[in-house]
Length: 98
Image 1 (spheres, rainbow, N blue to C red):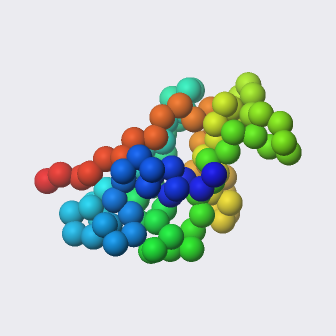
Image 2 (image 1 turned 30 degrees about the vertical axis):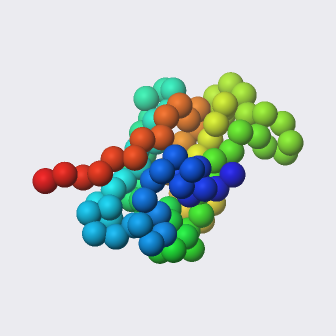
């Protein structure tokens, strides 16, 4: 499933709601092994970009297990795979405050 769809269901400001202060929002993706990656909310929103973020729980029809699962956040268009998060445990939406 696409990450923006999950974020929209969770109430994250996307589409016409992503403007003003909401544009200072970002996502922190945490993995079981302590790995963390940050993405801006705008780079996930299809209203702003053609970038795609996939939240996967299976590959080739089989559940992700062990060091790959139970969830994996994949950015298929990234050249290096460093922003893909395996063993994903949490996605947090944070609004930057000054």
